[in-house]
Length: 192
Image (cartoon, rainbow, N blue to C red; front, side, top):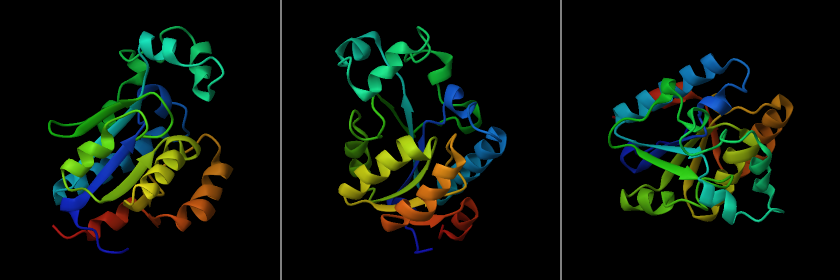
């Protein structure tokens, strides 16, 4: 692993929400690995940023019916509301004071948030990505972050997807062209 400067690094914990994490096999082990990554990076002085997907009534009303994200309109009423339990960050990886927390209304972490501005204001130029799902928020954010010139790492064992074959294909093929693939244990080698 190329050496990371924790002071210029942020861990993006993406869509680790109660209603999304529950869709993943072995969610407890996944959450434990994400918690380990959070604790390790926080202890080294890195920024921790959380991204969650949720909608207000205004968000849904403004969304064109033919938009790909409009499928949330067909979900059970209230299930993706900004204040619904299912859209809250799971307690096993809960934010602490000083962490960045943003709410998005599209797949990627940047397009409908001020995340880039908040990261840049802290001098962040390197991102470590962890999220659910690999074929959703992780790939979208990876591409967006790559286009914004962030140095990128993907925590292969803190990302997951309901489709394990697609997850493996992305981690093994598409992602390494844009980011370094690492595991949570690799973070132990960070300088303090």
